Image 1 (cartoon, rainbow, N blue to C red):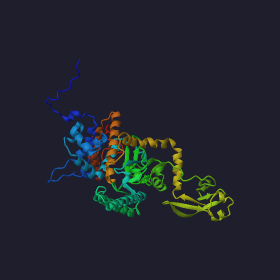
Image 2 (image 1 turned 90 degrees about the vertical axis):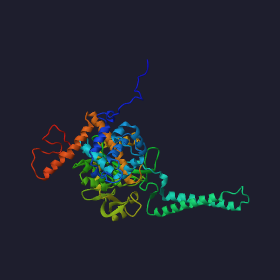
Image 3 (image 1 turned 90 degrees about the horizontal axis):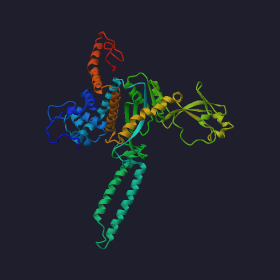
Image 4 (image 1 turned 60 degrees about the horizontal axis):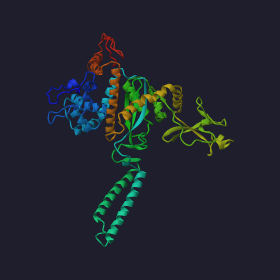
Length: 519
């Protein structure tokens, strides 16, 4: 018995690319999404062509290539170029176009800021087809390694160490030159010209380091290769500190879809919660939002601003830092009277509010009782100073409410990790996107947009497949509503014309069978 026989490779045949892409294939969904975008409004480069010069590649085709690449773990421009030559699915998306790797790379670089807008368009699409809950989100930051070695980030200590090393090398080579001059035979004579070249190079490097020393008087660190990369505790891969970016991410609870993100140079998450929560709230178009965040976001100013803007926060209180006091009275020994705004010390004396004080950039209220402290019989257990002062954040009332809320909703707060860590695990651990290919903050943000867009795209495709829904049809219906029906409704409303149908937030009542969950 022989083997199964394939086709004769020498036989002529007509290849139709459309036959190689099934009906409900993700390539057709990519095509439907990208062709539905307004490239001019999004401000893509070459969205409008000129009458003179060589015609550019259509930005739609280039965007489809990148979305497909990130969906299939292909990010390099050279590898994407190879895909256009060998991958039938890419050939179908690109309609046979063959851009070189430089053109592919330039597209991502030139449209870095626009890619964030494309990501948001897909989030709005997810909302339109009812895949976002818009009730509860989780926020967290994760570190991605920069396209830069930590050795290329200069700090004051590293520059001083390198200068000392250079001085030692220059001294050694200068001694070699002196020996060269004193040598009597040509056989023992070192290459003087070569040594002089080395010394010249070392002195040039020393001048560069000395210029960094001046800058480090006002700056904490200087990145030589990527000016926006910073030293951070990255975690994982046995790397404690590395050149990284911090990506703050907001994930919706319903289907673990990414709602918004922000790439920052800040190594910690403090001060990041309010701004990104407001953006997520606007994208979800909701009047109130519940946000779950870890202790890294525990900032009184940020949390208070969130609460004022209709964002209900559940944030874990960080563990107290510093050395624990073994003997005597701690801060917890002082009881606060919220109604009358004073503290009661262990000796039953009142500490009244005295003044405001800035401590580590935070504005605190100071409470004390100078006269009581001077006469206190148990003062030695309380403080070694003349009197004891208690600091209280001006936002502590809000933080007390948050602490109580988080404590009473442990089951909900436990879901924070499973919500927000889901995309991190997929993008970083499964897909292997742990390090950026681009440099500088705008380009890194553009690359993050593509990675997160690919994550959302793959997740939506899988969810709709499980529900038996056609993602391509859902995308086409979404764009049909917003490009045709919605402008008509808006036009009629501006003319104050009474129509026969009632517009609600979820559907158009004149066509009850259609699912217009886009408004």
